[in-house]
Length: 355
Ligand code: ZN
Ligand code: ZN
Image (cartoon, rainbow, N blue to C red; front, top):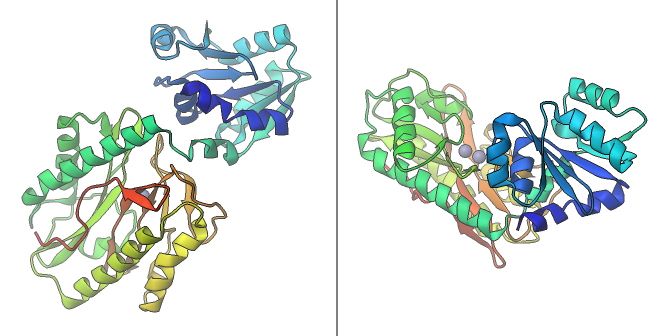
């Protein structure tokens, strides 16, 4: 399986005429090698692969990366320089999107006379289509997080702070076996709902308002991402109307998910509907993004995207309306693109829940 994943890099070897490719960003490293630690480096040629880590990770690397040649070294770049000389590599590719200016400086110093080939975000796109192991992992973590929220719903009531809600949700996820939260939860109540990324604060929830909760867990390195907007007590007609607009945009976009649809086209399904309903100025972000070893990854679903959905991709669908001084609504599910459409992985029902 990992070999199949690494073979997705071979087109880069041809296109960029690489002798060696260096991968050090943690999500790509985990995807390509199985390593779950915090520092390491994959050196890959067309027919060999080395995994370099320091002494803190020797045992872990031996257990997690059994199919590569392991090198223990305090300075991975020096290990690269030694191998480069031994193997006579002349052109070495690196992850431009994840390499700092000072790291590039170090590459240049350690590898004099070697051509360095920057590979852009297209390298991360190799993780776009999930294999069966990943689909299973994403399904598990999505269910875990949804079940945690469903368990917590009866405890959400006026007087509870946004921060307390976020904390209880994280406890519940961990009790169910999550490694942790997938990202800092967004809990935005009342007027704060107008902030698409409003962090959970000390504000107390009040009756008669909406609460947007954007949450996800992490399990086996994989993330989930889901948003519910719930009503506390009786909410106004306007709250309900806006909720229905966002829900219809969400449902229409999910119904449009299939292999071959353009990411921009899918974004437009939700965006055009929201615009037709008169709220076009209040939906600023893209309709979704890929989810996997990172909570936000390729592909991006926005008016500026030029990608196309493929079977096996796992993406969110999350339209929203945010009205400054009033509040907002976002509804988000994570879906797997299947041969005929999609399967929803997240599990909280999306009709308006009144708590
Ligand atoms: Zn989210
Ligand atoms: Zn999202």
